[in-house]
Length: 254
Ligand code: PEP
Image (cartoon, rainbow, N blue to C red; front, side):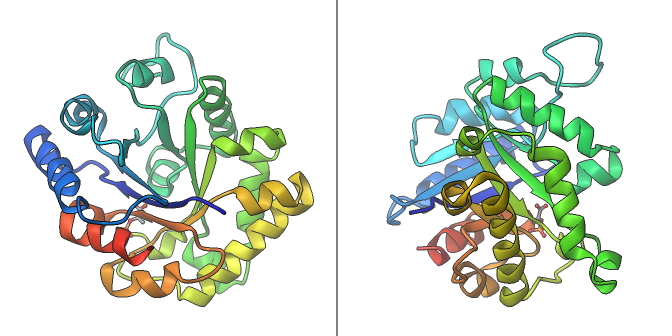
């Protein structure tokens, strides 16, 4: 059975006190939920990872992830953070390839392939994001764009590496826009991705990898999206900043 996952990407929001409060609220709000089959992940900004871990690190239901990292081990990369640094505070999961990183910080497929390699060498789990822009979908190129993104960044991996990969299909036109892919559009793309993985890495890998949907998931639309057979959860932006909404999303996946 595939692992269900609800992951909150806090992006560049919340100072240290607000991050601690949100983490604590989530820890409290999920207390009475049956969450045994769900991985709950939150991704504060770099500066707030350590304070949040100190606060809720003992809560085994909540995992903490970083929003990015550099591919090099160390060196002259001003402003960047290495895998070892993230791991030295107890964080073993990282989001890579978010569309905001690709768009505003020019992250290329090549750089992402290197980042994935570094994460795997360090035995970290990766939430790997990808997805088409609106124009691609309007021109019916969304399947080929997604295929290229996956091939360039992930198709050099070995089947056993996939134990550490979580995929997050995030159509860029649905991120932070209030526009959501329909449950059918999400299912169609997730099934397409699973077929690609099956052809390249075998049916076992394809059936084991969790594929999250991301793009304006809210308590009002989550249940329908999460009910699709190839949707294994969500990567959540806006709604992850409110404990009650985030908790409702965790409830929606049960
Ligand atoms: C995201 O940034 O990954 C995301 C899905 O954001 P939102 O839920 O706000 O669309």
